[in-house]
Length: 194
Image (cartoon, rainbow, N blue to C red):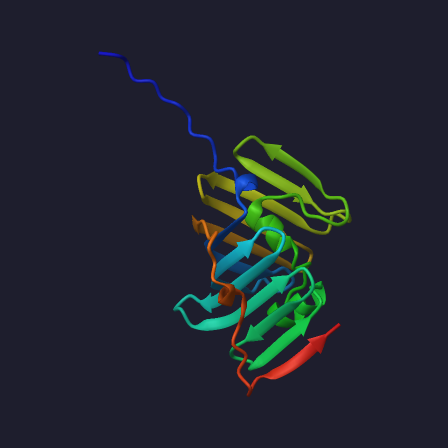
């Protein structure tokens, strides 16, 4: 009888993924006040092309849906009955979610890639953790607890800290084009931001 040998399993390689569906619990903490809010987030994305983010309260009540592509962003806020639309800027995220950041960072968070644009300084500790610091050192993204598809991602600025606990991922290569369309109720106020 041959002896058993154990082979250490390598962490999931997000650089090989081109699209998918993610589920995450999220906690948003305002730095000044210490107030926090817990939400559930569901992402669908095609790497560097488009993202749909559906936000719900912990009991499943829809809060918002956000669509992002290379040229525009739309944020539909259910409770406020508002739709924010415009170029993908931190201003739209600030108006929609209450805290601003470059919405294109969502791609970096999901696919564990170095943020594009200005130079970011990134370090990695094997499969354990990865950390990227923004060019002005005012924005930090940290990936920890990386085990297969599960991981914790923290986005931290002077204004807020967002902690994402990713628990689920599945490939989404055959996504329906309607996935990236949000029904916009006619009664909602549309606010164009440029």
